[in-house]
Length: 330
Image 1 (cartoon, rainbow, N blue to C red):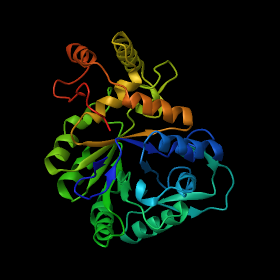
Image 2: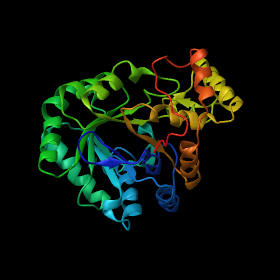
Image 3: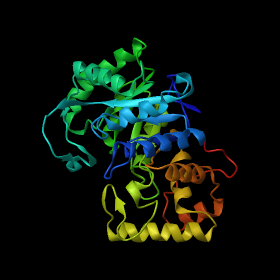
Image 4: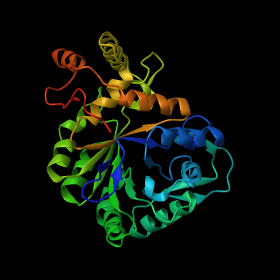
């Protein structure tokens, strides 16, 4: 377990991202969702992350139900604020937003102080818990002024009141996350897709800033939404069809991994975990098999010669930290 900044909240090296059990892209049955959380627990995962956005509340409800009988002190739970869910009374589905659920609610952007409180209260009700350990501002890209002026101070107040233990922001970009690290007292940031074997962007700004400030980074999207898990012509990158040049690069990485007796999946999880600012690597899984595979790959050692070949081939920046053989990633 690693701490989130100086908050005292601790997370496991591998974390369970609950977007998939909120019916991300395709439907997941209740039993499969619960079994996936059970498999994560059995694999030693003790950090679970969700958000109202995921399945317009379905992910939170399922995750809360799956964890209900676990000792509350034995796991870390985080959710997000910034989108309020309002009933619509309309029909149809939510696939336009990426989730295979009925469109019973609509998302309303709200980074006001009142919106933060209302969002957290609603999340606690859906989760069926009296507290969460960590809260992120979720995708404030187009709401920077309100997020810094109102939402962040509201989270800071919640932390000072002991309502939450750790606060931060979660985004798919590094620029604004770096600003949060430098200009606020966040404990952690969640950076999705910007520190992977294919995208080293966070290495130039976010990670050095986090290391300097003692802020923890949780890395999501280590597989870049699929391409680094299984590179093939129909694979996705950043939730869209992977460009040909990136598919070619991923296939090259896979071939090098296999030549060194490892897998691309193992390398994709090991790479972000090796940076000293990274506290946890967040993986999304929709089945017990996917959970177990991620846990096995995360624990598998990746040969030093693999990383050296990537450096020699200029597939990795020279200053990117890589795992030390024999070092426990968790």
